[in-house]
Amino acid sequence: MDLQIYGFLFTLFLTFAINGATLQEKAQITPPQINSNSVLVALLDSHYTELSELVEKALLLQPLEEAVTEHNITIFAPRNEALERDLDPEFKRFLLEPGNIKSLQNLLLFHMVPTRLTSWHKKNHTTLCPGEAERLSGNMVNIIHPNDIIKSDGIIHGIKKVLIPKSVQQSFNNRRNLRSISAVLPEGAPEIDPRTNRLKKKPNPVPAGAPPVLPIYSAMAPGPSLAPAPAPGPGGHHHHFDGETQVKDFIQTLLHYGGYNELADILVNLTSLATEMGRLVSEGYVLTVLAPNDEAMAKLTTDQLSEPGAPEQIMYYHLIPEYQTEESMYNSVRRFGKVKYDTLRLPHKVVAEEADGSVKFGFEEGSAYLIDPDIYTDGRISVQGIDGVLFPVEDIKVAPKSAPVVAAGDAKVVTKQRRGKLMEVACSMMGSFCH
Image (cartoon, rainbow, N blue to C red; front, side):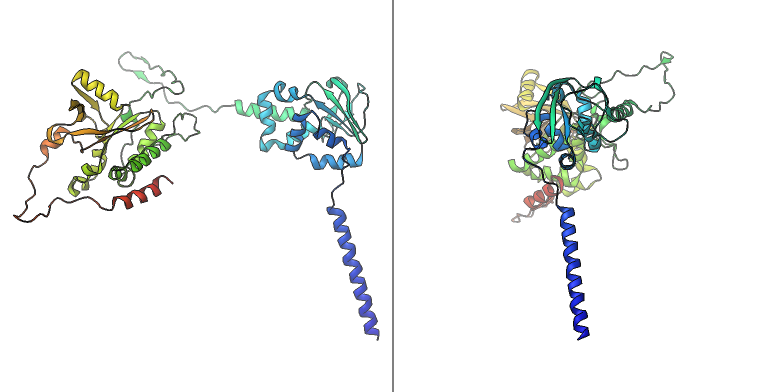
């Protein structure tokens, strides 16, 4: 019997304890209730839209709800023009930076006094902005709309200018001073021109968007043993062109155009030329690509591509460091007969001339016709389709001309083809380069 009584009392005590803890927890979680006639609701619905937006961005709604439940407040609301146009743009950017939300909160709370002021007396008042020094003096406030909004828990006065507390102004000044400090770059000893025995003058600064000062050959990658310096990124200080995106676009255009999968494969998979072309375009250079089609690329043998650096040298001879279209090249050859274009394979040049109403490149047996004009043109990269692979005249003379031996009645070709399954290679290439 005693055990039953003790068990009942323990259960009753435990029930009261749990209910009490639950009620206390609910009391702690329940936020303060705001009357729809509150001065805070009136501010959010008022014509002071700039101030109300900043209050929401500064995450001050909940602290202000707690403040109006405890006491009346007086809000000095700057007109919209003061926050939108009259405020220093650099100072406004400083306030809206995510890392400076505390400064934004202090500035807004500096416009709120935890008491009801129906008339403004020229004396100091404590504001909701934390800090003993953040007191609102009489000569700081220029009221242009007194008692603009009156509610039971507060009042709003319209003022002409934004009030800035000392702590926020000091934080902004410190940030601005840090930005104005520039590190001094180390400079080497002054160089003397041996011809004049005078100090060499520094070159004039290059304006933004101007063509590069150095020739394109100086900007090319020195070779596989020495990695080139990376080009500036899309948001870099000296960057004006997004070469990587432009090269990706022209390679995608080649694949969608059809018949140039082998060239795209060499640029992306067999060599790093696509990356180097993107870097050059990012640094301000322009390129014209003479693109051999798949039928022409299939005539290349494994021996021609197996030598170290051979694919790069072949492709360099098809890259012209100028921006040429089909129209500009055809007009040139019609006017001047033969035209020599520089290539990225120094010191060799590619010769162009008019033939059968089109442009023909190269020499005799190693020539190629422009068959697909302006496959891709964006002002920085131009791609012109040709029906043959070009070689310098020196390589043509050195190359053996012995024809493959074919037995009578045997149709098997001795020449080795380079690769097959072009579409599979192209798809894998686009997966590795473009994504």
